[in-house]
Length: 440
Ligand code: NAP
Ligand code: HSE
Image (cartoon, rainbow, N blue to C red):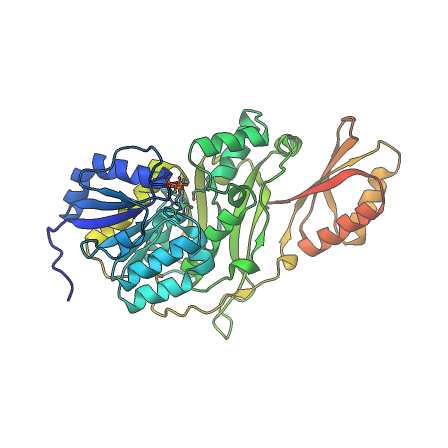
């Protein structure tokens, strides 16, 4: 029998006292009056789980106890909800699994866990009739999980496209506007609390890909296996390409995209989904091009609502805590669980469109010796794959060769890969070709 909730404080066990956990404690304190006005209850932190109990850290809320034993949270009968902000997969999964077994509600910001190993947890939460909310796991403060799950639930979503990683966006913005080197900008993003504990998840695109898997689940009601996603991050981004892109009228952004290709309503009810994470040149006139710093943005095309654009801080302590807190307040209101947004809990596996079929214009930069016939030979390689050039710029010798930069008309990823292999075979490249998609 459920305990009577009304007016009794919601008692939570907080797992993780890092960037987001620390932010949550701040906002629970500073906004306590607002929380109570909205929910009729206060939220009380009873236990705080950390990895290293001896590490010096900020003060705990009154009455809260620090522990390094997950069971102190999961098995405490006074705790109503466990907030998982430790990150990673194994320990977090174990914690949530046990907490659900013990009848706790769950709030988490852990996109890696939910994207790679979330399905059994959603199933267990359903079976146990527990709330499992995860607004902070996608795009920080932007309320996109709730929006897709509820506000846009009556729509057929056709596409999603966005900037889903604050760290990468911060790095690209700093390289673009302040001329910072990649490594310096990354260190700044880490010190501002934007990066994952392992920042390769940010710069290699996996973090954005985790978020994309969750968005696909919410928008299309299918499970898109993380391993099926085409993922490319911004590691090794060269300032020269950012500068060249500007000359052509573009900004370089790390994009996550999912769209229905072909028949929207096929007989088996499962449209093909083309999805991926990739750095791209975004036309300066697009709203996405002006999303800077740690901000994220998501454009949704839906058949009834039309085009929607969401913009806000994608990382950092308080913005992320804002989303965690909203979830906790839903738990405090004792809302009926609606964890996936769909009645069926066994979501079908997505019909995955091959990334090779994906069609786009491209930006290509090659470093070559300034000799007659080079441009002709490269155009020949492109033409052999049916690719036509839209614009070409040749810069002066950089010491490491002449940068030859061109934009192509739309072509498939497969044709571009084959054309670049032909260019490589010419034996004229001073370094590997650089190639990015261009948003049309
Ligand atoms: P963080 O600053 O590295 O903090 C992690 C906290 O968890 C630390 O307090 C750490 O303990 C504790 N911890 C780690 N592993 C543990 C374990 N096995 N057992 C017990 N405690 C453990 O991480 P964060 O940036 O707050 O991120 C937390 C989660 O939120 C991650 O899933 C992340 O992806 C997600 N998220 C982060 C942001 C952001 O802007 N940072 C935004 C959205 C979502 P110690 O203090 O003892 O080391
Ligand atoms: N590391 C993540 C980012 C945190 O930079 O976007 C927010 O999910």
